[in-house]
Length: 108
Image (cartoon, rainbow, N blue to C red; front, side, top):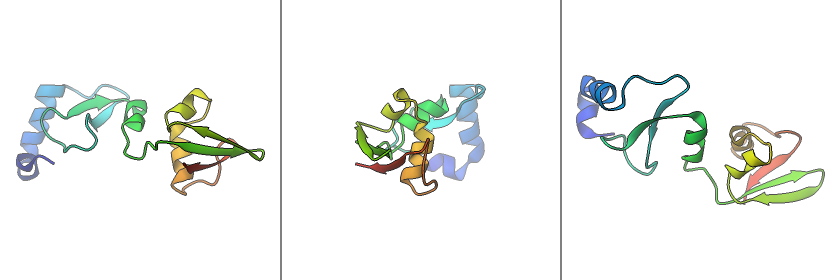
């Protein structure tokens, strides 16, 4: 986090209010560059979908096994296009769930 904000929460809050405005419904604070800090110019209000795509754990490949057939998706976000929830797939990969829509998942 930006050093000045660590020392002064009011300064952080004022930056958010003045630069980003009031939090829109359905959005939360996100770093534009996920490898960067919470600092001026690297923050935005983002939807859950935007945050999912911006995760460090958005693997370069995701493997599904369903009814004995293995399929590989190029990234976590691509699972949504196939009718799966990237968030639930992520939970399977991280071991918080065993299956999603009857399938097992692992990172490639």
